[in-house]
Image (cartoon, rainbow, N blue to C red; front, side):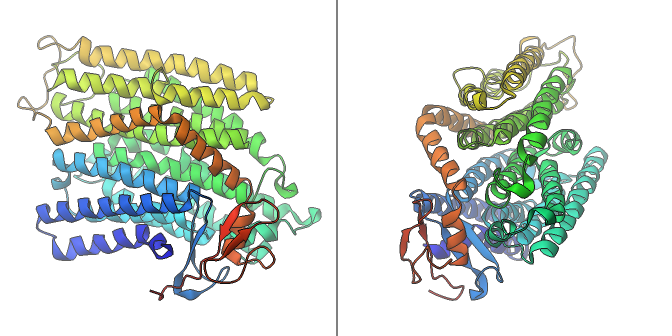
Length: 534
């Protein structure tokens, strides 16, 4: 099973050039191979989740180079869960793209889509900070190509803004990596976790600078205020299916913060003391509040959903910023909810755009299939603002519960509750204007009088996301149990470090043998996996 760990990276990396070389002029063949590739990724990701669900940590060493000198991929509960979430989201987005014919409106959509999946999967699975940077760049290049898919001046301007801001983040990332390497001589995350603890109190300046730079880089990816400026225009102007896929992009930033600041810079580490609560939580609360205000002030539906994403990420980062096992478990539960909800809303935005001709929140001609679209919008809006009975309500209750141990508990409760109320008003206003007040006469006519009726496949993709939200609600207990054990694994990184480095005294040396870590009691597995073994 260990060889399958590299499959989520290799499969789309092989599928993309195959689509370009063998099916460049045959959209039907591209669609078939792209869907088959994503289905295979779901099956592989599900197998990886099952394999790691008992605490097993999987390791793949490329070229048989052992860490910290070689490239390693590491699979644990967190990384495999994120790969599965990405794969399921990708299937729904891909089905919508095919059903709405978005993939016909520009060249190389399916190839860029596969490269995007490669970059995201690699970011989740890599065990090395430099390779995290590499996968960030892969997904950045692919996402820019997808963002300007089908062209347009507004889309091009938003794409340039998106690239420039993320290139600034990449530059900061390189500075952080340089500082880390200068201080420790390694960029392997498990090796860094050991070496950082050995640095004396009088030599912490370089490490603290690197830690701050890293949190700034990941905050850009996660769109935390005040580093969120790239998101509203970028997501609003991107094609609907692309914006839906981008719902997982901000979660890459959240994942990186959780991974790095539990493994390398934990809260009890002297060299980064005070970094977590002092920096992250206040700006997360600000993101939550500003996103809600943006929802209320938005005059176009796409902007409203983009600001809702910022507010949703603020909720995620509030849970992360509390930085306890309970809050991290809550953050992971809410990450799944936020990803599915944001994707559903962006696909609904595209249904409205294609049928109505514009996204202004003014009374206009009804959209095609108005009753079904309105029902889907209401369900997604309820989930996004956190009303019962869907998973957003459960997730926000978990965040409030997790905040009792924080000195900012009053602020967390106030901001979460008031922001939820503001978001409810904003979404209710948008829904009433779009669907209740819609009229055949008296409003601006659609740009295309013969607007196409959404296809059943398009509705099926959006409905699939809503169905997943319902399942996320019904299975909240089991999913929260999984995220709780995941958080416990993150806060006890001994088995992770021992598996990657093969630390003597903690693990047996051969093959797939495993024994209990003396410090944590967690089971860790050291696979003797080589790139050429079969």
